[in-house]
Image 1: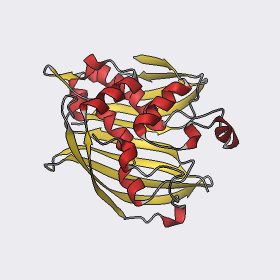
Image 2: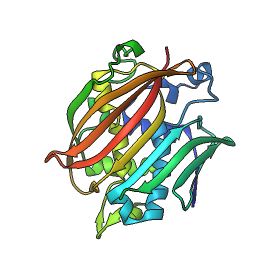
Image 3: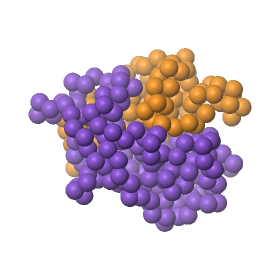
Length: 111
Length: 149
């Protein structure tokens, strides 16, 4: 199964409001460019949370009682990208953004 | 209601922690905070979530990842963050639902597991455990991030 989510700075700002951080790499485009990125960065845990909803879809109620998610954030996702995340039958998660893998991991159930 | 910003030192508002200052084995917390229905609702919005996926026995549960905005509270309260921290990895598992229709008091504790250098970057790996106020465990996680220096 798959989710495609177009990313905007407004979405990053919205996560920032609830996350309560002030890490300018998420909000200051010029700073992000200086750090070598294409633009500001979607928060890593925000990516994980987008991916985790596939776990809820796939595993149903059991996901809420004994879910287990592992994610490595391996690349940037910036405003203007589409965050495209897939979960396969083995529990493997992968997300692409800007044509590159940005998240890899798994969503499974604990025993 | 406890918003993460009320209990999480913010980048730029405090002197950030250098790589040298992190100590392996350092215990973190305990820190107590409340997750409210308002927070659960706002969090659902940020995920563009389908709330119907989070109903258990007819009752609205929160997204289990609603703890993520609070994730760094234990470590940042002990080691205030500097600007430009980049998250690298997360392993999170939960063992009970967190309900979206009630206030849940959470007690978070943790420990710095290790710090290491890789490809010229300075990484810190740490763990956190989130329990209800009665001591029953809700979730635990291990997080790795790198610090610009």
